[in-house]
Length: 81
Image 1 (spheres, rainbow, N blue to C red):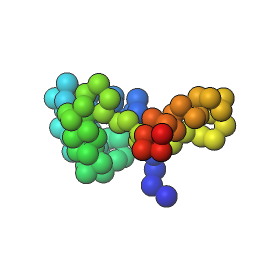
Image 2 (image 1 turned 90 degrees about the vertical axis):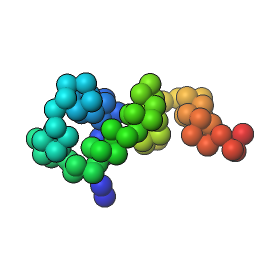
Image 3 (image 1 turned 60 degrees about the horizontal axis):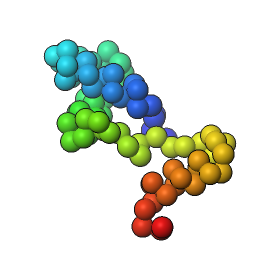
Image 4 (image 1 turned 180 degrees about the vertical axis):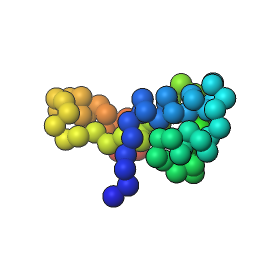
């Protein structure tokens, strides 16, 4: 199974490249991720800087109340509503 990273990690990593001007290949190497992964995150960030990684983190089954889980499911699968 592929390693998963939370949105804060992705955003902070992308900002090292986009805002601080560090080389993507060096950042990827320093953090132990593939350059392709970092370039994909950068692309997602540039497409929608306010919500770059929407839907990229799985919600644990026991993460909240049924109402919260249902509202998040509706956001993820709007065609079922």
